[in-house]
Image 1 (tube, rainbow, N blue to C red):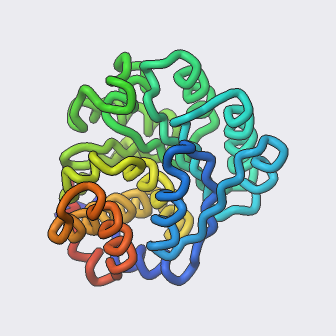
Image 2: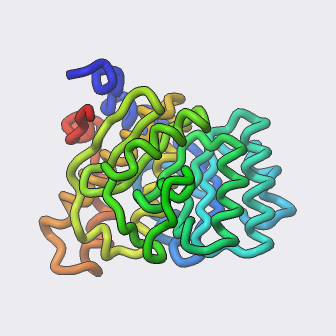
Length: 268
């Protein structure tokens, strides 16, 4: 086992999240706000959906972490995202950028390019989104990736070196890198891909874990492992996407420190 994995203590990460109840400020996709809030509550964090430009910057400065998800962006929320990202940076608040469908649509691609220059703590997306944001691809098919996580490995490492943070690429094996170390997280279920907002909720959990642990790579890995482990548990009892979504929230709540310590986390 390499030092990259040895330094990631998932048991301690889960304990830290439960003990600290981080307040996560979510500027996110309107389709997924309820699921995102419920997922944060299930793991022991506190959600807030503050997306007015008049309040976003002020709230980002006092939140434990910020999620910026460009899934259903428009002029008003775009300005709130800019203000929140600048405020989080000035306050030293960790923030996560989820570049939903970047590369396929000009407006959101330009906005995400602006935001990435503000140095997000974590960029979390699928392979096509990460490659497009790094200037190494044209994007996927809407919110769906047309590339695998391994295809985005070089782009992710380059982007992480540029931002000084972590880049997380979702896939059959999630790939996470800080530009020097690369970690993969296995597990999960295909039913996650049939649950609206599961990936968006993952971005919020990344923000929560990074705030709780104070370590960007550890927090990002812990969030991915938690989501994957909960999905595996939920899939055992689900009869389809509807029952899976409910079972997944229950499983997010049930995964404890000892459980998370046994997650499928490996080096590149």
